[in-house]
Length: 200
Image 1: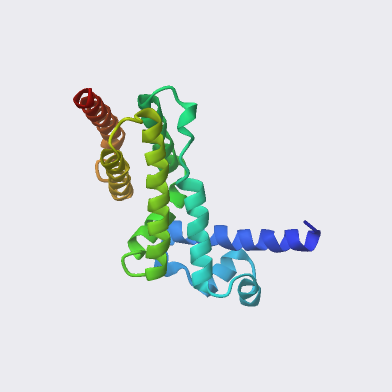
Image 2: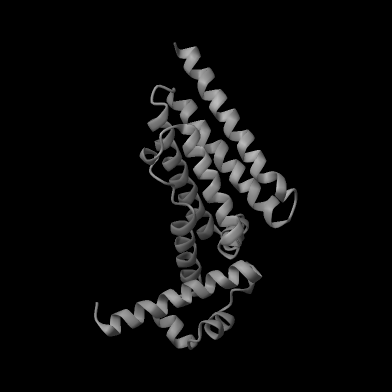
């Protein structure tokens, strides 16, 4: 990569990260061309040189958030499903605690997805990818579990995580969120054991 190309990519990434910062601190409506160009330290012309529209910036920001927050670890790293679930919860709550701006920005997209078709399509892709990764993990640990039941488990996890987003940032029973994850994990493990016994 030559210096000109590198500088161009750095400017583009700066615009994306600035957009995420605005989304995560002020919300979706606050992300305007004027505010973005000012906070990113670039002219509006430079902004439009790198992105066709503000919508393109938003979608790039969402893609960056998905890459950062929604990637699930390889289940082969863990000895048991219990270990995997414990690590999944630990990563999720670590992001809520230490990457609050990123998590809030993603939540801003979740809310906007109810009104914005492009955001909804991207979020649908995100959730489908997340559930596919979770399904792969469950298949790794419990390969004999019927496919319809394996598919239900990732959906339960997604529903839990989306619910926690709102509770966490509205400061509603925040202290109870981690213990609730432990309870949900125990319920999943119990459910898996019950299904295994029923199949024997």
